[in-house]
Image (cartoon, rainbow, N blue to C red; front, side):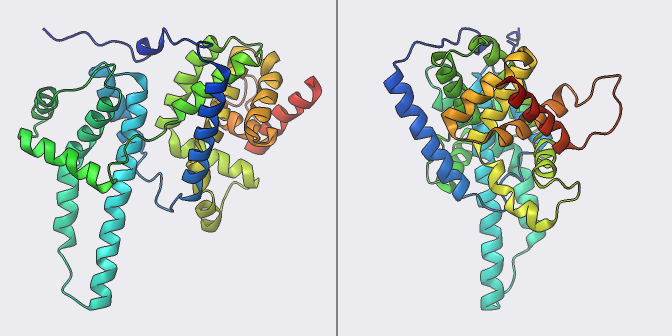
Length: 329
């Protein structure tokens, strides 16, 4: 008999805030900020190209089916993203070397088919590796993975599964314990709790989990809205899009946007206080927090009420949020 599927939020239903010393929180927040700054600086033009809706949805549903901790799904997406970027970079590097040396080119169609045929295996390996990082919770066994792949029509041996995990690990230099936006969200909520946030952080936490899922599933539309809002132009140029890549890798910015949007949903009258706290904690401008939270709200609860069907440019909506902040302070 199949094991019943547990809701994805269940593993965080008993999440406790206020149980860690403030000194520890300060050190952890500083460490996350340093990691985030490094990730933003190292952001490459290809980053984000594999956070597609279908891929993210597959990872989330698989994590849910295997009753994994919430953070595992996000971690698996990030591991897969970085691995696939490495694969793409290696292909481009090989092509450049062959052009330079005028050697006989590889059969790129065959190489593409090989990558395509192994993609599901790589994806599942990333989920399994992510589950091993949360070994205190649950690790997915090789038997479970092989049975799942077989049910999809992919026949692999245990040796091939181990080789796939090793390929991912070697490609990323065994650096797979990657920070996720969830870590930033929960750390900032911890600080908000100590700072006397008017909205209970436990309520914010539940809403944040839902919105973070949504942003991952609608990654491109959400960030496209944010780009248009930041440049106040509905048709960004290619150069503007390329310069915006680093924003997509800024998990601290994503976290404050998620929390601000959650606060607006929970209690819009307290929104300005929450945003003020977030600004003082992270140093991110209120304007940036407002624009990101508006982009998230636009794709979750909608930009307009049912009685207001007029088209509102994204930057005008963000300005309205900022005006609300100014009027309430």
